[in-house]
Figure (cartoon, rainbow, N blue to C red):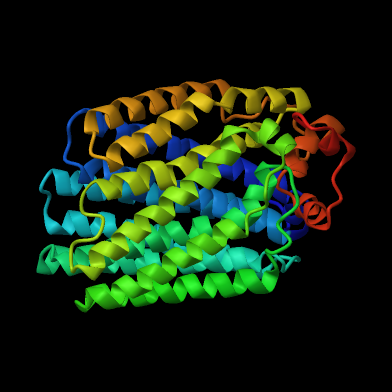
Length: 438
């Protein structure tokens, strides 16, 4: 369907929602594949790479484009480019793992890696071009962290290629992990949380989260990561330890800039909001442990703390985010939206994820595995109940979907900049003041 720029701006929310749904479905699929390989007893790097470079980066791709379009009031990317971006990431991630696992020729591994790099570069281009056409500038700090994350992702790929050529030296492996885990993933998480936590909790952004402070925080984290990655790559781990302490301080600042939830907001948002806080705490704890290892010239995140960071840190934040995004993206009216939020509300899942994190941290792998399996089964069941497809609606003869009042509300209420601006100004709707699902 061909649409003009003005049409894409007017219909930016339903268009980018449709793109995000497709990307998140693919992300969930790769996440399940990663879990299946772990259960099958594959070497740890196989499920880790599938989950991080596949499922997590796909989730980052979909949500970063979603937030950039809605928060910046910009036209949605063309469907063809969005589709190319998601599939190059997915096929590249699967191709790298499969070719390495099967001892394929270096040319095959290189082809898969090139495809993955193209997906990262394309993500950066789509984000930059979308933000440049946006009408709102308040959310530029978040967009800047997304672009910085893509840059660190490319650095991580380059370090991975060097390891493949020169061998898996400890310093290169640590630099590779920092660039990918704390850069590509961490910058997106840190840049999004101050805004997204307010959306999940139906609250105003924290009064401390000024645009100037958010810019300073984004710059601080990027500088700390640059210092840590460079120091590790050149073999000066103690300098890297100092940089990682600075990065952990930045995570503490991110947590300090989150809006303090009221009892009413906790009652409504429940586990999906708590997951953002506890996941950020695990993230900070893992970075502190990594800094301690660097100060002793030991490998970073070499053992159980890598699993802690991935499962209890980023995995928990992703879990809480999807518990909000899946019902919101499927829309279908207030009743369907409320039912979706009820489907993904799981205190059991929250407890299982944190139990897995604690058990892993203290060295109880069997308990950690059982808790993680329980969390995965619960999350899969709830995601299937919530669904990721919109209800069928009649299509306008010219190709556009008519937006009735009952359907328009869930599309624009929860991520549209107008909602965010009202949150920031304290203009809560009457329904929000009453509490309960919207």
